[in-house]
Image (cartoon, rainbow, N blue to C red):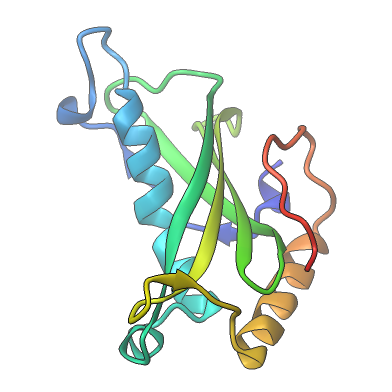
Length: 157
């Protein structure tokens, strides 16, 4: 499973502050893990400080989270990501959280949109940005098709 998600983020250890009254990691920390640990991949895609200074950014417009196995205090979490698809304005990112045994514990799908921050409107990504995304997507997809159904989709444009 993990080889199909080539972007490997740092290992996370579940702390007491991340746990709820049920004794497992609270759902808010699943979303936080997907959000925080995917950020370096965003920079690789081209969402850099320079891109932001040029007036562009990205907004998440849709998320789907699935909780399959719980994480308990002290357990290690292994976040991994891949670009599933993109078009001229949207990017579909899939992330997984694996436990120490390599079992799939959570799935995240996020659709992000490219935004002109001056107008605060969706705009097409520059051609060189799209070319970089294509290269990354091809690299990610060389590992094979994902072994589970996706809930989110974007249309080609």
